[in-house]
Image (cartoon, rainbow, N blue to C red; front, side, top):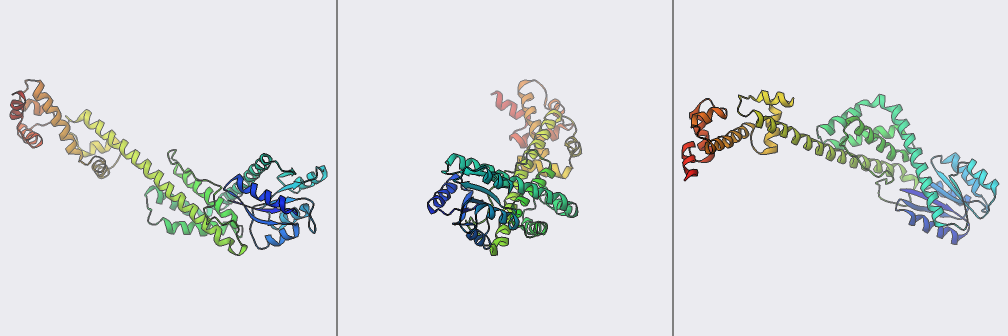
Length: 362
């Protein structure tokens, strides 16, 4: 959310401008509306804003002087100048002071919206760059926290994530000092670093960077600034962690299904052979205990019951489509002991091989 201070000595223009700003986007809100630069500076002593949209010629303190004061005291803020005077010297001075735009009255809605779009982009880019610089400079001494995130996400330790979010917030707050407005973009940069470190192109983290995930207050008193942006950052980290867990779990589910399909394919190709669990584990390059649990979890049956089902289906096919004897079929499907084969067949189909053949032929 972008909080905007509107400064103009004409109430009608001030109200009209405020209305248009809030119509532009749910992310742009008018936090304050005052009639001159002096009132604006008094308001800023008590409240937070991201952007000031100001007239040039006003009593007591004009717009250009106001921008100079803002640059010195509130360097994170950006400014847009709105003026009735098509005066190049005003425009030049305003842009030299860092104003993003110089708009002429009467304001055209499309021009205002284009200007807001540019200014929001400038704010986002500046804060993202600042947050990235902070991360780059501070990460080497805090690598352990990144490792904790990676380990928690990859092992799905969701229960302990709330505590780690608090630990992460304290770390990030130590980086930003009193620049609390950077907590939200810094949390975003941190989450992206976690995603990049996991190195999964299937891990899709989509968060709307403009939303501060706070309580939606239009006006934030400076006395509550720290607590507000701490809350925003905590919610950002919690939401990011949740989406990371969901994405990682989805990826894990996909990978698990692929492993099980690999195992099934291998068993279908080699079920007549003398296979061991180690053979299967070696095929998918995983431990025996892991594939046993995974296969059971994904299919509801064990690996060996699956092998038995493959052998029994093939045995039935041979029994009904050939003149092979039971002992020959036993050997053909992988059993050296025909008695054992017959017992398994009866357990599977309810009849011995010969009884089954007779029943099906009658």
